[in-house]
Image 1: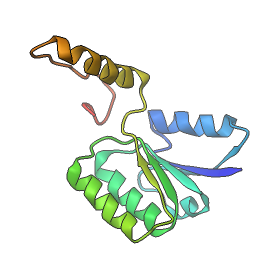
Image 2 (image 1 turned 135 degrees about the vertical axis):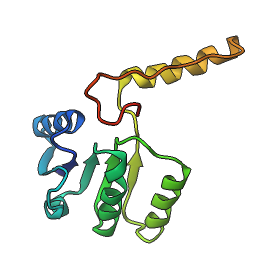
Image 3 (image 1 turned 30 degrees about the vertical axis):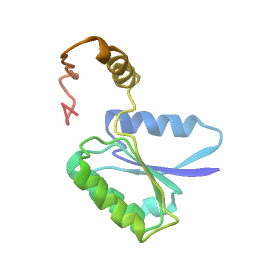
Length: 140
């Protein structure tokens, strides 16, 4: 059984992850954490899934690494500086893994694949990312 927790559990993606984990026969949801909540329950997780916001994600990742909890991050907003900071934290924690996959949307993944295939055929192109009006971190 894989013990899983979710940062951003009340958000759109976070609540979907919670439902998926609860429905999985080989996983147990051990922590639902949202903004302002105590992170202590996350200590029971083998892996935390983060679907928060760019202004919160780095603290969540650092907490996971400091507490020996693996992390899967779906939050957006990573630049080279942030990635370098995560790498430096991981250098001190060789048994902890962090996977940053900032776009879980099949549409976005397909868009990137289509753009790569089409690029050789165009001198220039523009891809516009559009979200529903309630998305808190748009554009992501």
